[in-house]
Length: 307
Image (cartoon, rainbow, N blue to C red):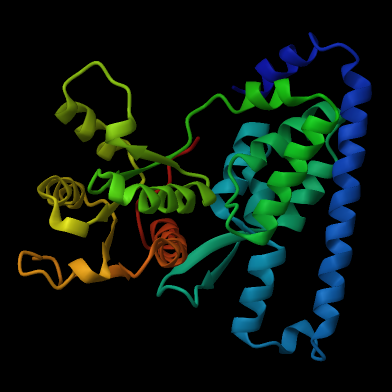
């Protein structure tokens, strides 16, 4: 949905002006509280922010201010705002998590633009931004939660459903489909959704065609692939190999006890070895973040799909 269609939809909702006023005031109050909490946490460190170590600054900014470049760029595109305003605010940083340079924007830079919108566009901007955010980060989860809570509180859920009708960018998951892997599958899906992606699991997908064309299509469309080699399923090798042939990033995982099996022929590639499902989730969160940074690096020609 684009903003023009959204504005037409607004006209059909009863008492909409009052609801939008209340929603905007609610969000502004929540952001004000967030800024106060941020100021308090910064004051805990006896040094000025400029004197903090790189690791301290990155940890602080990741929690309170970091917004991925794709989220802000997509927001500006959807709102019809000029990119010339955006380019002045863009920064680059080398991640301490992965050996790559990534582009980011601070939330407060975007907030200045959003706050100046009238109530109609303000609501659209908050919904459009929330669908792009990484909820694995503190700021991403906070903004997503207050937007959802505000829409629910003032009976505006219909608007959210209208705006969010587009498919999210996907991550294809190749793994052993067995009841023994259900908990692992849930953790993989949870980690994927925490970063705003949709997990594609072929044994859960509804389709009318033969499975192979569907599988090829989903891997082609995916941002990258997660392949779990537990029990060494041949289909997982095939799907991971197909993704590699397309120059897709492939995150490889395997349960620790299965990694030393004689048939395992990808051991020279870096894998996430997990002991239990909680360990898998924790390690996968970090690897997904590092992979997103790598894809979005200025030195990489691949771009995340625009939702």
